[in-house]
Amino acid sequence: MFVALQQLLSQSPSLSMSITGQGNNLTVVVMPKPTAGDSAALAQPLKLTGTAEELDAGFVEALTQFSTARLSVVEQVEATKAVLEAGRKEFASKATAAIKKAGKLSTASSPAPSSDDDDDQGQSTTGSTSNDGAPAATPDVGQSAINIFA
Image (cartoon, rainbow, N blue to C red; front, side, top):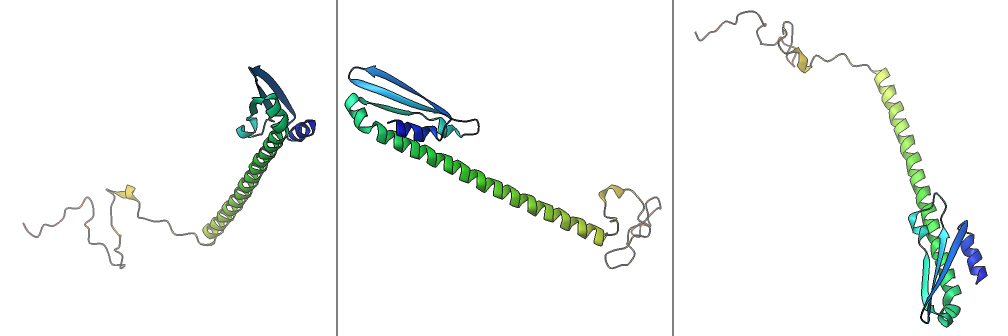
């Protein structure tokens, strides 16, 4: 029994055991104390209820299975952490590469300032051109337009 307990203690800094009795049955609770970074699943205690004879026959096996399952959870948490860290590093390197590429593009070819701003409403359009390079056909603001239908 203590070999199985020692195996469980290799995964947790300490554990507590509680044994209570009711009638012919005993209830044994084994509670490993998880460390600060452990997941909530590792705080789950092992609770067994049975007669003294049943517990004598199956306690060590149940404790070994519990320890193995708990170790599996630890391994899963560690594997998940490794995958998340690898993804974080990959994302950071892609973001850095994209920023460098964008910086090179903006310094290599600086586009001329655009005159397509929406805030030049009400300003004169003298000298403006259409898309084909011809002067725009809109009258200047402030000059009276000639009404040919009057």
